[in-house]
Image (cartoon, rainbow, N blue to C red; front, side, top):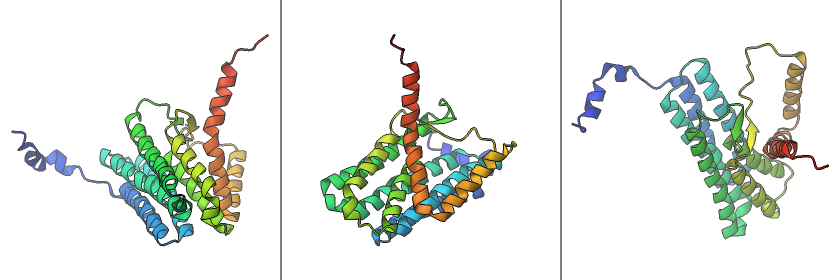
Length: 252
């Protein structure tokens, strides 16, 4: 009886009409390819291209969800596919890039640091999937995996741009890798920007600020992007510290 259920499902007209939406999953596939491309480039020693590919994956990952919501093509398949793609692009790829660039000479400590990051990304994604309906959408619980990947990839990109050998920065690279991995599984809250409605009018100063950000990023992408994600990675800790200080009773 149970064995016949999958066969009956194939002939169910309602289930046959349910397909896979092309546009959002195409963007997810592109993000997955960017993460895979970053891994290949890292294995070939082209770390600058690997770091850039991770940033491309981050942009594509931000687009697929928005496109799915705008076109009303959300699906359980898309959510699962997006999570698996994120694990490759923002979990495995950054860990391998930073390991091949700087941590490989540290022996056991190097791959332990890379694994902490990789495990942190997996746990972060699993927690996000299981608490999606109960958390405050204005904040992420723990550092988002794309931001953690951008922090690691941005550091590699900046150091390569300054022609600094990875071996000379291995301890700092290990610290950043472990910091990003641990930050993903903390309970600190990071602003999600999801409450920003792009369809509503905004003050002119907001538009001017966005233009300024684009100009700064285009002037020196590796340094500006790394700086922005450094600030964002620390914002959760600063926000928590401010909340603790506000709740602390005043001693007279």
